[in-house]
Image (cartoon, rainbow, N blue to C red; front, side, top):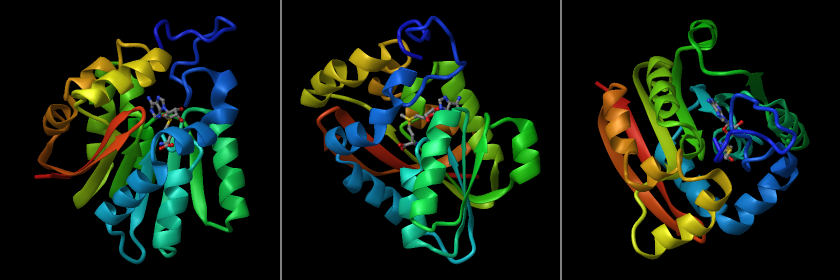
Length: 226
Ligand SMILES: C[S@@+](CC[C@H](N)C(=O)[O-])C[C@H]1O[C@@H](n2cnc3c(N)ncnc32)[C@H](O)[C@@H]1O
C-alpha cells in the first residue's frame, strides 16, 4: 500500500491501485510505457515463459492487461486468464482485449482458495509489478497462492522491482518509493523476492534478466516447484 493505504477521498480499497491512487489509473499505461522500458521487460517475460499451444496461463494482478496481450500475440492458442481486485483496471483490460480481438478471460477478485479450486490448475502463472506494492505478508501469501495454482511441473514467471543498488536505488527512491511509499517497496529493493519464492515452495528460482529503467531495476525470474 502507499504510505497510509488510504485514497484522497479517505477510503481504503483493500489493495493498492495500479499507480497508487485510483484517480491516477487512467494514466497507468502511459506512465508505464514512458518510465519502465515496458516493451523490453514484457518481451523478456514472454520469451522466458515460452508458452506452448493450448497451455493455460494465469496473470495475477493483471491490471490493464498489457502482459496478457503480449502473451496472446506470441501464443494465440494459449488459454489466458487474468485476475485483479480492481474493476477499473479490468474494464480497461477488457476494452484492450476486445480492440485486439484477443480471447482473454478476466476475473475480479483475489487469488484465494475458492478461485484456485474453481479455475486451477494452470500450466504457467505470471505476475508483473504487483508485489512491490503489497505488504510483506501479502507478498508471501500471493507467492504461496501462485505456487498452489500451478500444475505439477508448471512454471512461474515474476517480473518486479528487485534488488536496487547504485543509481538504480536512487531512481527507485525518487519514483516508485515517492509514489508507493517505503513500507511495502523497501523489501523488494533489499532483494527479498528470491527468498520469498523459495519459502513459498519454489525450489528452483532463476533470475533470467534485469532491465535497468528510469524507475529502478526490474528483474525477471523463472521459478519452479520441486
Ligand atoms: C502496478 S499494477 C501492475 C499491473 C500489471 N500486472 C502490469 O504489469 O502492468 C499492480 C496491480 O496489482 C493489483 N493488485 C494489488 N493488490 C493485489 C492483490 N493482493 N492481489 C492481486 N492483485 C493485486 C492492482 O489492482 C494493480 O492492478
